[in-house]
Length: 130
Image (cartoon, rainbow, N blue to C red):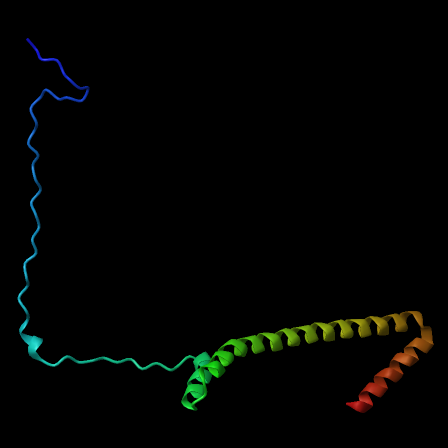
C-alpha cells in the first residue's frame, strides 16, 4: 500500500546528500628578510597647472577666499569673453574687406574710364598712407 502525497511538492524519494566544495583557507606568507630595512619613499614633484597659479599667489599673499573664488570663476569667463569679441571683430573685418573688394570691382567694371581713374586714385591715396 502506497501512501498518498499530502501536498503537491512532497517528495517521497530520499534526499541526496550534497557534496560540499573544499573551503579555501589562505595561509599567512612568511615575511621576507629585507623587511627590516628602512623604506625608500619615492616622491614625484610635478609642476602646478597654470589655472592654479592665481589661486596659489592669492593665498600666499593673504587674500581671502572670495578673491580666490572670483579669480577661479572670472578668469576663464574673461578669456572666453575676449575670445568671443576677437572672433566677432575678425568676422566684421572680413565682411568689410569683402564689401570693399566688391565695390571696387563694380566701380571698375561699370564706371568706365572714370571708374578706373577713381580706383587708381584710391590706390595711390592708400599707398601714400602706408
